[in-house]
Image (cartoon, rainbow, N blue to C red):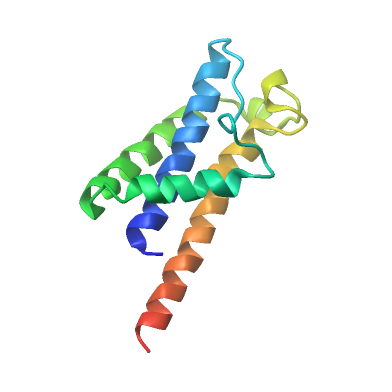
Length: 126
């Protein structure tokens, strides 16, 4: 809906990824999506991120997003290419690779955000 909402969304997906990776690395079996969400209803989770993000200022979420981005970069650097890109390398990634979770939470979401911001700029200039 606005720049802050997009940034909140990116930040929250970073948090999902960080939580998923760190807990599973410690042996705490954790799903990527928190209960009660699943891949059929995660849109509700995204809606809740946006609602909860209304309490944050743009400068606050900008800082948090920058910090979480760096934390994810640091996290990914701790894995080898084999660990990242071999499907089922970790039992907690299901049938996919760990790298797919990073891609989904980072580059795929960044592309989505870029398109949202670009569209907003285009429509606000009219």
